[in-house]
Each structure stands twice: as C-alpha cells, then as structure tokens.
Amino acid sequence: MKFLSVLVWLNLAFICPSIGQVVGKVFPEMVAETVEDRKVTLPSDVKGKFTLLGLAYSKKSEDELRTWFEPIFTKFVQKPEGLLAGMGYDVNVYFIPMFTGINAAAEGTAKRKAMKNLDPQLFPHILFYKGELKTYKEALDFEKRDIPYFFVLNAEGTIVYATSGAFSDQKLDAIEDVIE
View 1: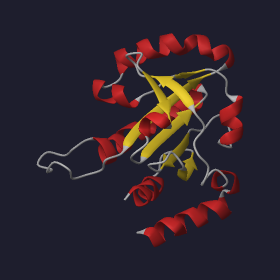
View 2: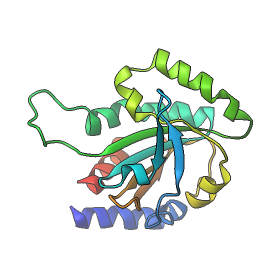
View 3: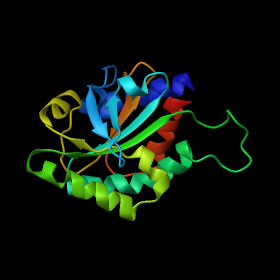
View 4: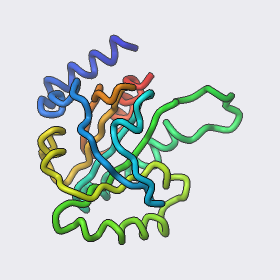
C-alpha cells in the first residue's frame, strides 16, 4: 500500500504540479464552525488521526462539493451493520464551504439551509468558514474558483494527499489508499 501511495503522490506531483506542491506542507490554521456553532480549529483539533477535508469557496464549487458527500460518508464515516467495533476507518471527515469577502454575510443563511435540507448525520462533518481567503488561496494553491479542493492530513496535520474537482471513483480510491 505504501508503494501505491507514493506512486499516487508522484503521479499528482507531475500531472498536477500545483496540487503536488502542497503535499508535505502543514495545513494552515483555520477556525470554522459546525452547524450547531461549535468552533473547530484545523489542524490542531484533528491531530492524532487522518483527516479528509473538502473545501469550496464559490457557489459552483460548493455544488460540486456536495457530489462528494454520499460517497465519502459511505466509505469513511458510516459504519455498516454487523461491523465489529474498531473495524472500518478511523478518520475525521469535514466538508467546508468558505464564505469570504462579500459572501461572508451569507454564512448564517447557509447554516440554516444546511440544518433544513441536509441529512442530520452529515451535521458533524460540515464546517463553515467565514473570513479571508488569501491565506488559504496562497498556501493551498487554489487556482480555480469553481472547483472544490480536497486534502488528506496525516495525524500531525501535514498534507499527504491533495486533489480537486469533480468526484470520481478513481479519486476516492486514491484517498482510500493514502488513508489505509
């Protein structure tokens, strides 16, 4: 598995150089809130196990981020019936819509809509970020506004895998290979 993880990383580094450049960096500190207004500070509050983060900072990228909800929830969060305790994945999973600039005012409305329209099982896995974008855009190489970005952090908060764009089984498999 480690060989496959290295192969995936090398593939990313050469095919998507900007995404490959964030691998090996510590995820920049971000304070976000759950639907219930509980603050979560990344990466410090998630240290100790792998963490999968999906970030979006435009309406179009947020819509695309939602296409990842079900497959990621099913693969990494939901515990199938009959699974023994301790089996499956022990990974933090967060989807983070980012409200920046003029859109920051919409954060409260987005929280209320999430509580109304989303499956309550997703609530603990959705964080809302409100603030400036520049730090994250520079540190995480956000190049395109209209696509979501995904990062896998190791137990220390270092980015060990990054991808972006539309959901695909191939991307999900690569994330799984890194987390295993």
